[in-house]
Length: 419
Image 1: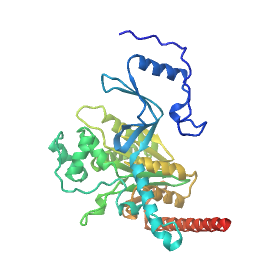
Image 2: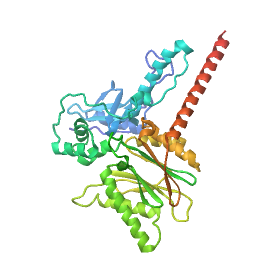
Image 3: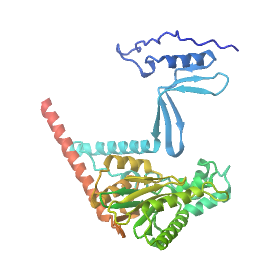
Image 4: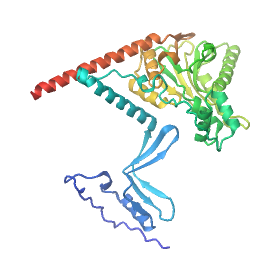
């Protein structure tokens, strides 16, 4: 089959007025196209692809509820196969965040309608925990008792996922299917949900972690997401507890070996590079699997008053940060930190921002949150956060009252103007 040669003498695509619209209104899809775009579309038509003008939205699903979205696309299809070619601007959409926002709007609208008759449409006090009844935002519904389809997954892998991360069989099967039977990724997708946040202040470093709910007879000392590597270095992690225990033990031995050999404490940068090196080694050696954790490391170097904060990833990458978060909902926490982080924060401000960032995704309040504060070489303490959470809730209620007052004043002013 011969293909007609594409020339440059293509006339500009004419933009017509939209039927039924006002003169001068132009739809996004009807804008004048560049010469390269015109040539591309003409070449597709010349080889037999058919233009599909009725498609208004194209999506490509990614992992963990994210989508690639093309709004108002220009789509061409091959008549002989299911091959599609799409032109348009690609945007990344977080479906979980979108669903949460929709739920929040619906609840606010419902509360507003209920309270309109009583106080003239006053804005209700809204807390994130109202959406989930005290559960995580991304927590799945409980088992409904229907049969579990285990087609395509190994029952031994299902048992191992259940044993490693203490989840129901239904969740273990779902995780394996979503990760194409990959055992490590399945475990990570379930257990990686727990968050860890690290922040640097002016002369303080803070780690905040979400921990699992304890069983009634369980000892709380055995369920910790933070660990001291040396007198001046603390680590928090998100991922598999068993993998973290091995990595923490190796790091502690390296810290003590460095101290005994050189008679000096190890620097934060040195131990971070060591941990990242161990993680990287396990990605390339046969018979071993990668560590299923990411870590946040804080500390003070000897005779230094400036805190350090580092991130290491399962791949062996490490980097220095002012503030960061790891875990399944880390994107939401990072967006919050980018908006609210300030340079040279005091200890109180740093602790409060850490708790606030965790409460963006943890809906059980202080119950499942643990805070570690390091304010100098060898000075680490576990912060009691119940009081911090109460202060935050009081501030939120005061802000809601202020908005109610402002809204009422605006309504009264508008009513007086109309009269």
